[in-house]
Image 1: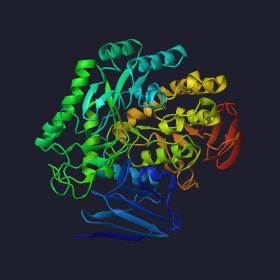
Image 2 (image 1 turned 90 degrees about the vertical axis):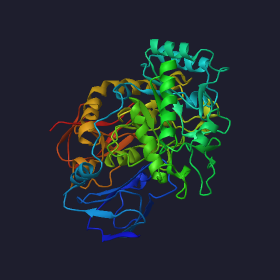
Image 3 (image 1 turned 60 degrees about the vertical axis):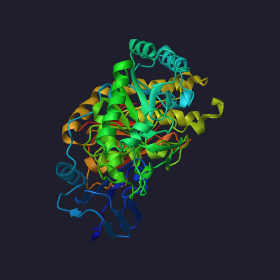
Image 4 (image 1 turned 135 degrees about the horizontal axis):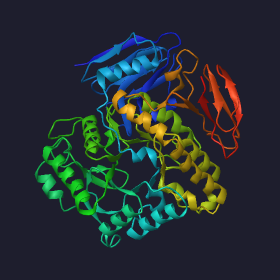
Length: 511
């Protein structure tokens, strides 16, 4: 059966939603041509939700294809009705109505330490050469350079193979001793894990014989090519597969004392619509089940999800390049984080500071863009979470190192404020990082996405252009204090403020 929806955009209407990587293309207006397919083939986070600045929203219980074509909106699905809901006045009104009706917050949130202290991921620092010695050396450098101990994520390469989730004995001589030492240093220890299973894994035959692996339309174990290998994929709709996975990760907690998991992958694109699964679920269903399994652990991180609105897990943006660009570079952080917030994912983390693709970091550090590192750190510092990887605090460029370290201190200063909104979000579902339009409807803020509201009281306006040392900022009505100088600005105007490399422009609401 076909389900269809068709309607016209209102005058001056703007729409936000869909796939989080499309945040850079939001909002969609009456001049836009935009298509979103939430049925198959996408990566990272996606949602069957679009919301309008005019107090309307579109929702379906399953994926659909939606097209915005210069004021005409059409949507179609083979599996579920698509509804247009109206009469909620503003972007905020429509979002809160949709959240209450379709994705109410589950009352969960990641551990509070994830909001208070920066996270450290070993990926860019160690790449695939993860080792006990390397991890300890990395942690010691953090403490030695005056960075606060927080969550340390041991990334891909610690394990024997995919699906054999034990430490490599050659690289990790005493994993329990390593975890104990990291704990004594003040760190929480997180392990990278994916739903892929190598045929070389000892559990492969058990999983195969018990229908714990996704099968293709011929009934054979589906072998899927992903960024690291060609592997089988856990069928999370199988009770035995789910039990096996929880048993494995629970065993790692019990045996080694690790604190949680970075659950990577599970993107919709690694499954097929004609796959055979124990629970008969779609690709979206697999992604959704992977997300929900993360709630077993207070320290968690997802980079892919489906219908994640209201789910109290940490959502990291997809891997970014070491570039300034709007697509997959620094300039994507704000718009994509804003879209996470307005689609029900308040507990967001931008990608690793400076970028999260290892291929960008094989060259000597003198060839890195040091200005980019600093502006990236500043852009991340007042997000709900911030994550380092490359040890920027020990760069030979001392000014870059100091400014990147200072960003961590600045996050700590605002941590109580951020935590206040995180605690509220677990019950209200409201974004922590917000579009200006969310707080100030009808003030011409619909397309503002190079600055953001942090809660109700702060406008954060990071510099995201290379060589820019002045920042244009759009102030809503009221009075606003520039924190760096104490100068008071009358709102309802566009202003430009100085933004030398040492400064992140932040305005505090006075009244």
